[in-house]
Amino acid sequence: MIAAALNNFRPVVQGRLWMVAFGFGLVHGLGFANVLTELGLPAADDAPLLIEPETGAPVGGEAMPLHLRRARTTRVSIEANAGICRGMLRHRYAASGLGEEDQ
Image (tube, rainbow, N blue to C red; front, top):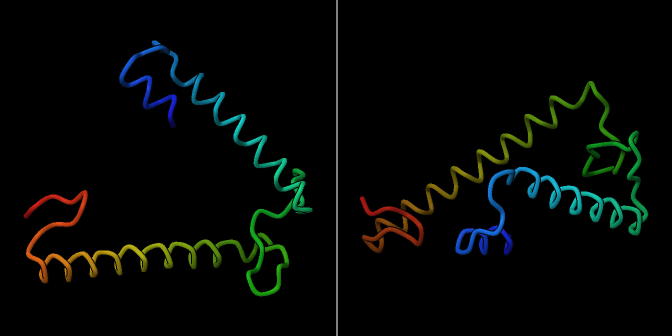
């Protein structure tokens, strides 16, 4: 992120920015895989992508849509709650919050 910010002020990389992003992503991905291995978690190609929060068991293909739906519902609930909070704060203080437009 620092490299991207500095490149905005003083362009060092001209064109082919996707190569730089790919390189950073690759390094971060390999670092994440190493951390998983150090923690004793499986990082192989056949490792489960999702696990049951209650049991720690891998989520099978037939249960995947349910878990993805639950994750989407949770995200929507958080966004809705944040919107309600912003509205209450805007009403209480008659001003927009940090990063919001005045209406």
